[in-house]
Length: 203
Image (cartoon, rainbow, N blue to C red):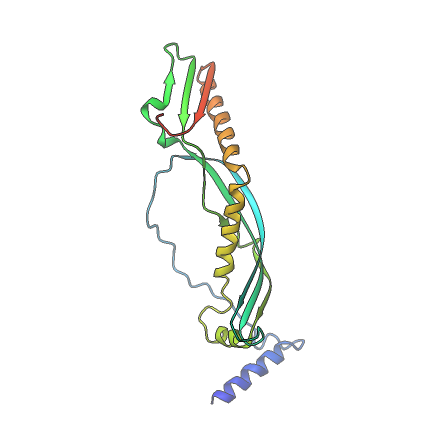
């Protein structure tokens, strides 16, 4: 029974390669997902003032001692593309973080430094270039519920993108953009001079 099923599967694969016979064993995709459920809502006070687009090529290789790569091992070449945002939390400004003169012509603000958000990978721009797996790994994938999982390379790509964001000057750009936004807003309200400092709120 098992041999007959395997033979039928192999036959179906072969026939699908022949012109005009692919529709016999053609695949159909059905989306039976349930509706998305709202779990929680958070009020946001962060002003996302800058975002960077990054790309990294991940070359991840896993070896096993005393076994050749053809038997046990894997190597994945993966292109990871994603974004990192930098924001300033305007809600962290203490009461003495805003100083306004009596004539309401000058304002001095002290804000916390901009911080980086978590890297977000873009599935439409991230893809595996090549995958090499040993015989035992391919057999394991055959019986796995998640064959060819890219979780490891996704995490590695996100980590490298996060490290690149730290060196990119993104937070400095976010603080510059936040200053420009606040100055434009307060000048439109009648202030003549607006000064923005960044550091620990309330100091």
